[in-house]
Length: 254
Image 1: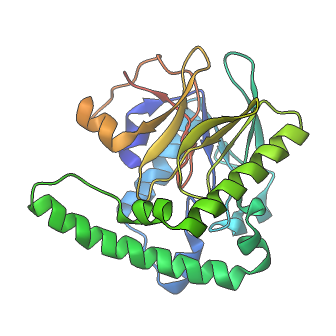
Image 2: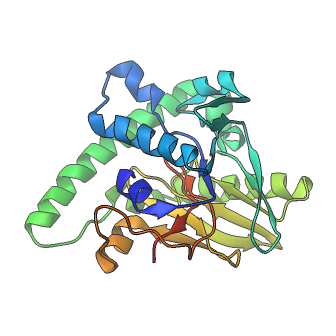
């Protein structure tokens, strides 16, 4: 995520929840210099004119107590309305309020978080072995998520609920995170966009100068288009990075 921030510029940057995993920090404190650099990179963008919106999620819900306030030109809000270059109005939110487990059975959500972290640890060792054998990265957790029937049904119900919220409020589309499944799809005229995450998939939702939206896999993008370490920014992308986990919606370098 730090690499993404260093090599992109945007007029708007939306941090769509779960930026700081407070659930995990409660169990054991872990904060490296790289984490400081991420925060500094975001604040630096804000100072240089990027309009930065932090929309807390369930893992960093404590920050909701500070909205609507600004910290170093970063606005903390529950949701935002973004207008694309071609005039479409998008509702931007994290999405956890449409998750019945998070709302009504938090203990189950925390249990699921433990299980998810366990899979991520297994995934790390699994891919270490793959690298030694000469194979590219492959997400075990994403594979399990898309293969387990209940998980697929949950994702479908979540998407439908978020889209219905946007439809009732007369938005042209919605941008969210929460479920770690990057996607752009049309639901009977309402655009659904999920920016994915920066834990396993490293995806960003981006908008270009014409208002077109697309999902960028940053690891794949870097492999196909090696960038210099100092700066590789152009104006070919107009707007946000919906950084979930860092959801991202940003103007990227070409």
